[in-house]
Image (tube, helix red, strand yellow):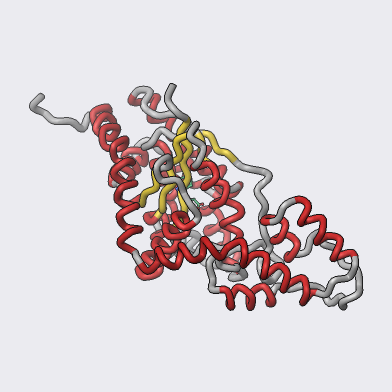
Length: 337
Ligand code: TRP
């Protein structure tokens, strides 16, 4: 029996942070070692263009994301790890899919609706101001990412569930018109992965500018942890670990026993400075080996490039013949044969 294909994409617009690591990267890397499934993980650089028109940032982020995943031990023998733009069949399929997708379906996409609503609320006369066709079509590109490899399972955050629903719709529509070509994919939303809070206590997110990058140098890591907002309780006063940003981060890394021990220290009134120093040392120990591998890789972009091109070759072994079949199915084929 053929393996289950699990596929997910990472948009290359930022530097991976602790929240990305705990919520998405770590579970995906763990899954890459499960030889019962075939993971497809890719750098969604075409998606990056929707949000970011700074070429250097897109390039730098692509390098950092790739180096991060490789440094953390992604099993590239089992997982197919590639850059979206190295697989031209994806963009080609996106066009074919857009020809079977109702515009009305895209009108309902959250990201587009949010942009329109923001315009309306600010009294803007044009509801579509600042909305590019890239943003509008984004769910179709995402459907192409998934359908081109006939992925069965797509691990995503809650905010992406609607896009998977749309991919299912679009796949069904194409299948109905042209025959059963596509697997109908399923979203996998993990409830147990932690969401971390950031420096200011809100959810750690690039859009709040409150992140702790995963592989910042040691000194900066310490500085950032010292900056995390706490309440004003003094040393000696018992503190509540639940809802505390520091405790939340610790819990995402530590064992059960370690977590209980820290809980005890909160109850006994450990000071914030002491807890922060403890968290810093713990995280630093946890991250140092991977950080060293990361820094070495960043110095050798050729190695990263080679790994990505190898991944693309493996990916295209599926996408090229499949695209040939899809072209044929819609009537785009040689006239002579
Ligand atoms: N849109 C996803 C995000 O912002 C990233 C992504 C692009 C993706 N293509 C995908 C995720 C295909 C899963 C499958 O998180």
